[in-house]
Length: 138
Image 1 (cartoon, helix red, strand yellow):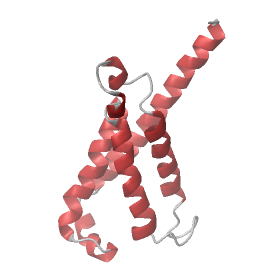
Image 2 (cartoon, helix red, strand yellow; image 1 turned 120 degrees about the vertical axis):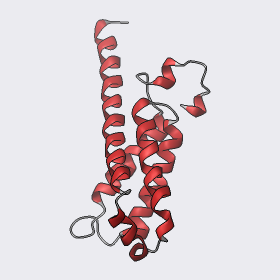
Image 3 (tube, one colour; image 1 turned 90 degrees about the horizontal axis):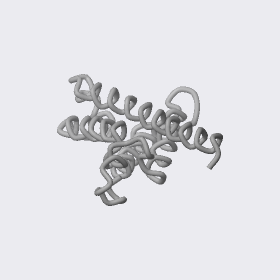
């Protein structure tokens, strides 16, 4: 293997870790903001009962953390993709891609978590460091 190939593989791993980190931070921040009482007051307007505040907040916060560290990232990305589909179709109604009520950010986040779901956590992750974990749990 040449030096250029080694550098390219390392760069790919670092870039993928950066993608995981960015997506994880976004969902950690979104999950933390959902613990705010104002979010609970808006849930009935979106068609959800108020009791869904904590499960919705945890469904973004916990997978965000797991994606960053690289454990159960496929499962976490699957959960987040379901949340993003709900945000696109149930909350925003998929009325337009851009503008008021646009779903462009949601589509970008959905595409990113689908990449993580298919590729897995990458080589810079706890799942890779712990070789005994089954591949489905990466």
